[in-house]
Image (cartoon, rainbow, N blue to C red):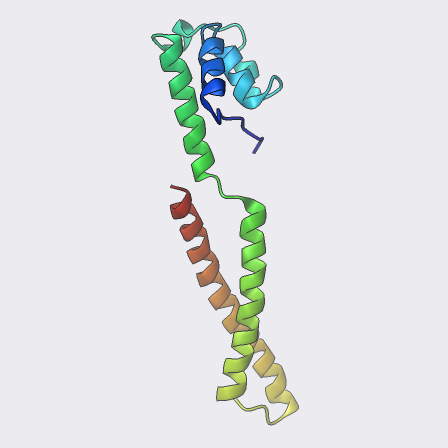
Length: 141
């Protein structure tokens, strides 16, 4: 997802309202940049052609949509980092569980123990990754 520019102070909000008077293209260009698909798709269009009553309403609707989009976006790198850390911790916990409840007495059991440990880790990882994803989404809302 591209970097979105949102007004961070009153001056930028005023600048965006002023640009909205020129049309939707200027608002999209300010938020997304001139080369973005959304910006290009509204080139040459008026607020009326987009079924928006006036520039102020149009700018507000666009900003609300972009803010909601940003809130719902999950940062992929943050999610991947948390998942890998969680997996490493769960692998360690799985190994502790296996060594406590299934003492290692032979080479055959050792291979089974490793497979069992990995299986436990995958199940725990799936549960924790799902919970982490939901937590991050709820936190952003």
